[in-house]
Amino acid sequence: MSTTDFFWNLGDLFQTAFLFYDMVGNYFNYLLILLGFFGFFYWMNVQRKLSAKSNVPSEVSDPSFKGWYNEQGRKLK
Image 1 (tube, helix red, strand yellow):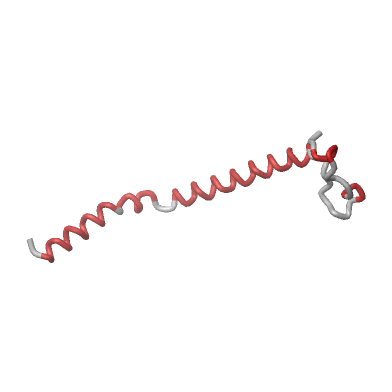
Image 2 (cartoon, rainbow, N blue to C red):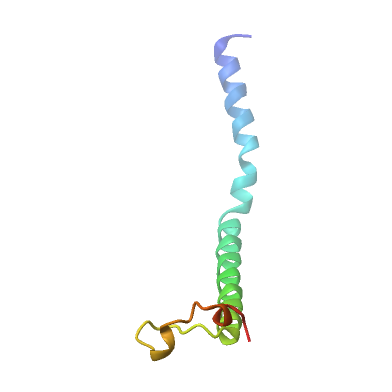
């Protein structure tokens, strides 16, 4: 077996090994994008629920901001 045959066989091996990626195409990328959007919206929903339970003011200019870190202010409603 010459080196030419070796490299041709190696090339054929790589071509058959990477056929999987031709079949998959961009579907995997689309799946990851959809999964990312689903996770983002899920996390935003969790944050909305936690913010509704919180008694910590969301703005520094809010008059109740001063002293929110006291012992009674640490707990959720």
